[in-house]
Image 1 (cartoon, rainbow, N blue to C red):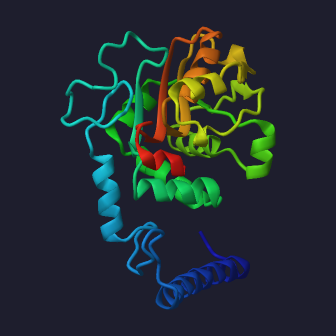
Image 2 (image 1 turned 45 degrees about the horizontal axis):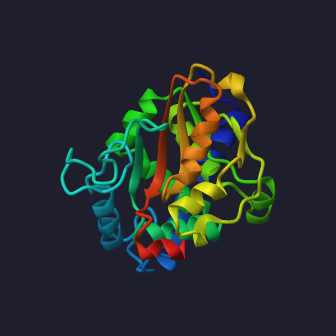
Length: 264
């Protein structure tokens, strides 16, 4: 193919812009080195320094129950949280790790400081979790846990929806807003009793698009699961549409008896 003057001009301009971008990137890295989101060290890669990344990986590699995602001592060991309980409305659940630092701090940045970049980074790490990969492969649709419209307006976004859309981008699974929050319940943060949390979620949700999840393998998405009252309430609502199965995926799962829950 013969390049005319206009094509040569575009080629040279594009090449020049590429060199300019590389030079700019190098200059910015020199004067503004990447800083760790947790400890503010300047040797960060993908938002975290080596030490903080190691701590996060330790949480991610902790053995967890395939049913409730709570940490257990050994892989495939009996789960003390599930022992003696019958089949649940949610068949399986997985999470990036338990709700403790550094994951807890990163979730605060995402949820309360509107740091979507952190949410995207954690969602991408979730895509490397073997148990999460398994649940995503088994799913037909992703259903984010909804916020009440007023709370979403005041916060500016729904963190579960951000996670779901990031996972959808990587898996091509559709995000279906099959459930809506019809009651603006008080925040669960200050309700430390499992019974009070369950009561708080009573009749809080309603089906919005039931036809889109009939006979589907549904994967519920949320940021943090504590006692699971919210996730179970959404699952009960989804069950009315008669899906094939209901599983759940979250960034973190917490023991409701831990004191650190009260700060979230």
